[in-house]
Image (cartoon, rainbow, N blue to C red; front, top):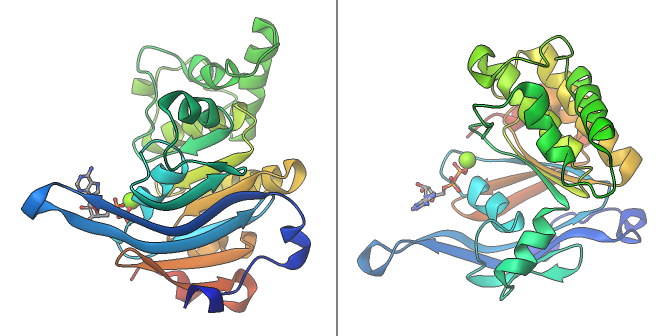
Length: 253
Ligand SMILES: Nc1ncnc2c1ncn2[C@@H]1O[C@H](COP(=O)(O)OP(=O)(O)O)[C@@H](O)[C@H]1O
Ligand SMILES: [Mg+2]
């Protein structure tokens, strides 16, 4: 069945693939508790392509993202990121690869004792050859881009859930990622801010050739995607060009 699914347009296949997944399966637990959560996922994402991933809670979306993000060891199947195989990779190789991947996960993971600006600057710290001042200026620029230019010195504790989410987004963007993985990045944002943030991610994809894989249930950002994938019970069951879908079709199952 996967071979029948729409593939990236040929023009995008000429650009390097950001993600190439074949026969990816994953299990949690041991012995009797062992449960399969991914079942033979096949999926490719070109550089510069924006792909939305939808599907009911528990179908394996976050697991898939953490495997692609080299946060988890591949158990079965293949996952290539920028052509590098993650199955059987060493911890050092995964660590190196993670430097090219921007991740926006639920829960923000901001450092509580650092200000918004310092948290974002930590992302920029991964860029070699930049002075302290350049990294700080970049952090400020990204915070302005997500609408937090007036909150630079606040601690996470003094920011709302949506503001914290935007700091996490700015931090991911500050790493100048070649691939961006985002797990419901707009869930805590009002519709206007949510859309602004996705417009920003979309611009990054198109201008810098960054691949974007984003879990979302937000029908308002459908038009910003190149493709929409739907997962159910650990499989990708549907893939459609985003412009062929009506907004209602993106709703959570
Ligand atoms: N660390 C874990 N240990 C055991 N089971 C897990 C773990 N993480 C997720 N699961 C289970 O795996 C399934 C898929 O989870 P997840 O990938 O988080 O799905 P989604 O993001 O689509 O909601 C769910 O049944 C969940 O309860
Ligand atoms: Mg999830």
